[in-house]
Length: 147
Image 1: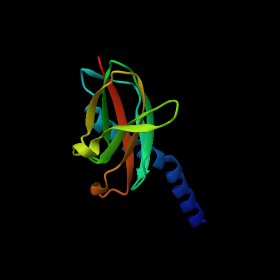
Image 2: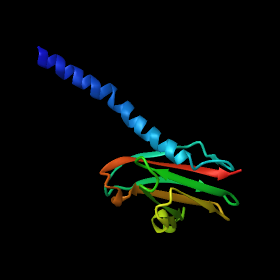
Image 3: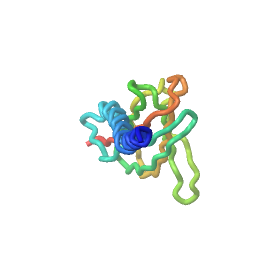
Image 4: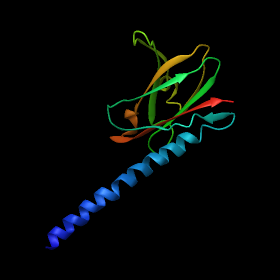
């Protein structure tokens, strides 16, 4: 009987507590990334989140509108520089992609600003920095625009 009760308690803990700790982990990453979305930038109101493991890539889609300056900020782990992200323009007719920016060419910068002259569909890929030694984590991206 004690084994059944212990098993029930363990199942309840996994069911009710584990999702909150995962959400809290992503919330911490969002706070780190959010520290870079400061005036004159305003958040687009979205939090792009994905749980990734080493070697895995998360993909997020967005539209950048002509004449606007955007800031992308990303985080995973407890410090800047642990997330590698790349921004690709996507041709809506063919699906062809062209690399616009990757922070891996800029010391894994935690944020970067983009001014677009024409409206463009973008795909943003995010992955863990292999040098961080992390096997998994919550990848969080925030997009802000200049007012």
